[in-house]
Image (cartoon, rainbow, N blue to C red; front, side, top):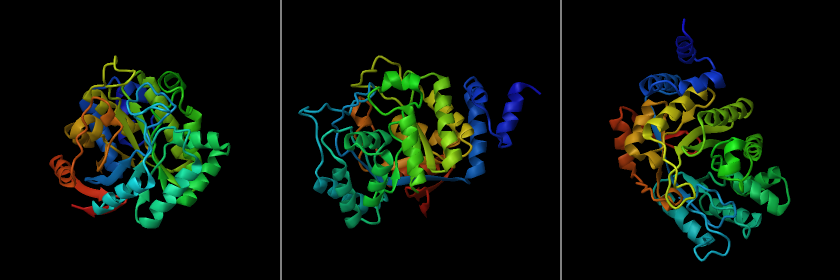
Length: 356
């Protein structure tokens, strides 16, 4: 039996593969990877493909991190900087509810002028008026930054936010969980270990979170596998991740505009390898936002079982030169159905709300 055949059999039989074996998968052809990843998907899911109706509210664009890939951030004192008022945010949440949405995603920059009390007051106000909305908000870098400016532990920050109404954490701010990449890409943001600490602590406190990866810039395949190994290891210990969501870097108004963007073929390859490697993750999301809906639904045949969200609002990727097409519910349903899957709306926790 060849090494390649043995690896295929391990994957198809549901055995865990090693980082070294995962690296070999980068040398495989795309149809083979698609077949293997789709077989893995079938172990977790029937032919239902899900999506969520949510709203991505960026409460502030003021940020001191200075990440090279970001076109959204504005420096402290910039005339283009903003902080949304509580009334503006509540109005946006009302629109989300009117749309039949279940999930509120709030993320902003590392803004030194916003204390922890700002977030607590905001969360309490949202929960008081909209108790049915699941608040899936604030990335690990935001939590770490709050702990530093308040001079308290991350556990205390998370406990206070949870008490105020925070339900779960998005995986944003991960980029690539490798010091070698982060030291160049986002040196002003939290470290690899700090990102891991936030999610482990959230899980210990009974909160769920998602894991993400933004790739297709300066990383190598070994960095991607390092990232996947780190989150697989956390999931082994806590079981607190609901899903893994990879997407690609988009250029335009960033410090990395000289780079060549990753191809759709490479995106699908990484998506498939992620599905194969993350044997303790039930849900893998395909990104129609960075890849177009056409590639997004192809991702459903490369291991993904979720097509992300019908977003009422998107500001971060739209800040680049890439045009984001936000689908309506009927567009999402039709796209999933056209790919041969049964469309279903889910909530933040990947529970089915309705099947179409």
